[in-house]
Figure 1 (tube, one colour):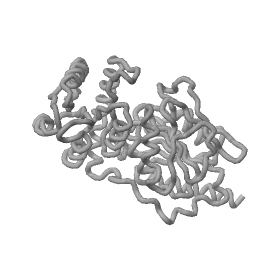
Figure 2: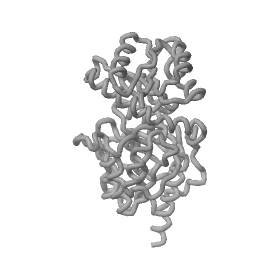
Figure 3: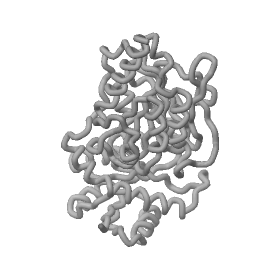
Figure 4: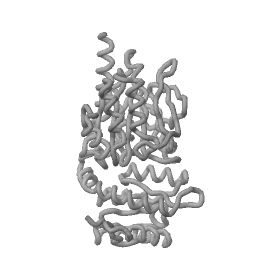
Length: 360
């Protein structure tokens, strides 16, 4: 398959650079370049590209506004071109919530990143986006939840006396921003602590945690080394650090380290899940969400073997059915459900654990 790409950026230099990167690939073609969304609109309509590379910061109409129009009127794979600034990070997270498949960050004097790194990132993300085309088309017809659900009032009994020693562990990558937002939106305020690995660099993990905090029933923060994991809180692994859990005097604690990447990732879902399997065993729920690759499969299987409940997001609701598929094939997933059902399934399993422990 030859992937047709439309590049939208107000910088002539950036348009030329990205066009050269895309055009040098044997499986990609630059269908058109555009200097702003008004220019891009007609080109997209007439050329029907497979992927759009869209700058966030543009005059006349910003990339977020244009992305919202695309996803509402003509859903297609979009990769955002962002900057590693606070403003750029906030806009990027919003774009991912709106339906962008992924993002690349521009080279800058402030970031130790070569043109070669940027080129590799562009090529990789365009291929991932192209592979997600069918999913985006099906999701636009109602296969996935359009918005995070409100917390269910009836779920409040989750944190019974016997559930206090439980933990929920979540892993995600491409498509994970929307997926995690949806899951957290469906959890009650008294849920056991939630630990999360989402493949994101800094400052995006910190901004993501801050963006989610206060939106739903539970609180959200970027994990810090030594955090005592508390009910009603979610802890997101910082970019470029592994997050694992340990046993403290009063319950579970967060541990961070800079050990080498696992499966080319730091933070790694496998590292988190493996620690949960060893420390929490059957007092845990493991959740694997949308993402490219296989990170999480090797760690989720020991969780299931240790007696934890394990849940996978189904193919129809994934942006990229890579990580959940690998976990399912490995026999690590006990139950596969749609994104909109993940939170409810996790709560059901926690209640089951609570009742089972009460009977003993």
